[in-house]
Length: 241
Image (cartoon, rainbow, N blue to C red; front, side, top):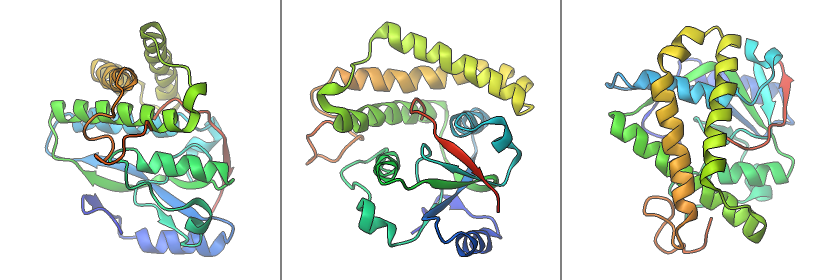
């Protein structure tokens, strides 16, 4: 199914069917995303999403076409070959947020990459104000903590405040450099206060969740009591249509 808050481009079906027909080894194809909505803060959301997606790729991949990645989550109106789920299992329905990222980890374990249209967009309608966007970032951070905690268990290094501060600074600097490569440095600099605020709330959610014995409301369903963007290792390879 496709979420009812997505607005698909006219060429959506044509693009995905042609790609899958031409690439029988591909299990999944996804689009880029363009947040839309009534809030002026959607521009910060757009920039944030582009930074989180495109930070994974090398310079040659940013020109467009289709890129292969073992790091991108299988979201953004993704189209799957149904046979893939016999290898990976289905989405984890106990997760209320981050279920696509968790499936992506299982795909990576099976050696299944995500194929990504760098320059083909779906629109995502979000009726949020600034507080709504920040709450979303907090939930995503908390969910990511739960997912990797479940995967790594006792081997996971718990976050510290100094580590969180370092991660925010490193992420901001890397995104600033990326904005130059994308020709969006002016936009990035102007939106710096909001970008830092989004990052702060994401890592705040991640850190706060690490201090809780029981998952937060909105992260997992009530019956799931077991512990479960932007900091996973990048493994990508370019693939042209």
